[in-house]
Length: 266
Image (tube, rainbow, N blue to C red; front, side):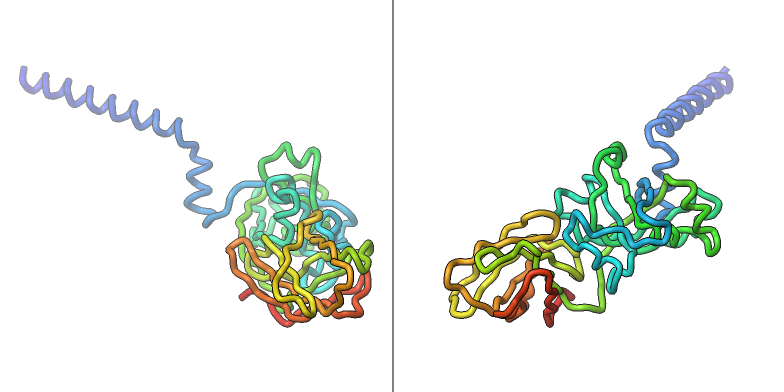
């Protein structure tokens, strides 16, 4: 009788353990567990591509124009949906992106910089990279670039990384600038890649004045009458680190010109 009771209790405990284990499995999808354990910090996202199949995309919504064709971007860029672009604050941020769910995916990550916005349908996804045709092709195994592009929309994994360019910070003067209004796009920013604040000072000034974000990575400043260059610029990133580019914008500055500093974030 004692053996029978012990056996019944054993069966009851075993059934309870199985029931609880099954409930836990329903609460935590295995897909999420696999991503956490196997993808080394990568999270799920969606990727598409735009422009020509081997093109460099655009720096449009960030103000970089066609500079994305050249060093240090080399066309390895992406437009981002709202959660990546963040009303322009996400311009210049860097990500590693890889694909593994398509047979022609290489599985190797590529590094891309956010230089444009993907509005509209891209916001139906939590995270959506609209890559340049060139960057999208680099997700594929060699020789299978067009095959992957033909898929159009693919599942990818991504993770945020620091930017590193073998360049100094540059600014490109907006075409609408004049002696009383100065606007500039900021390029080639290391580290966060994200400028949080910019201050400006001019010859003869004893203090700094804040610039305002106009759109994307373009910042503006109403120049007081009688002010002359050169202008020094203080850049502050998302981590509250600051670097100063002394005399970055010369007194003879002109709209459309690009000026290179002698500094960058480490």
